[in-house]
Length: 152
Image 1 (cartoon, rainbow, N blue to C red):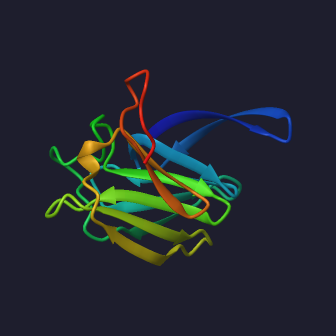
Image 2 (tube, rainbow, N blue to C red; image 1 turned 135 degrees about the vertical axis):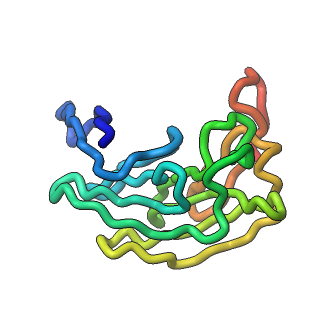
C-alpha cells in the first residue's frame, strides 16, 4: 500500500488529509474533483476513482494507453495520462503508442465511472510540454520549462 498526503482548500478552511491508497498511483497529473481523487493506476491502463468520503475505489479501463516504456505523454516524461477538469467535468488525456496521436476522453464521474466520449486527435503529444481542457476545448502548451511559450 502507498501512503500519500494531499492538502487542499475547502470553503476557506484548510484540510490536511492522509490517504491510504489500496491501488498505487503513477505520475503526478492527478486531480481532486467532486469529492473524489482521480489518478492513473501504476503500470496499468486504468483510471482510479477514490471516493474521499466513503474511502472506496472504482476503476475504469482506458483503451489503447501505454503504461510502461518510453511512450510518455508530453516532453517531461512523467506521465502516461493527464487529468483535466473544467465546467463540463473530468477529462483524461493520453497518447496512443502506435500512432503518437492524442486521445481526449470525457469520463462520467459517478461512482460507476463510464467513458462518455473519446476523440483520437492527430496531435503528436511528444511535441508538447502540457495539455489541458478548458470550456471543452483541448489546449497544448509548447513548453513548461521555457520562460516564453505558446499555447495552441
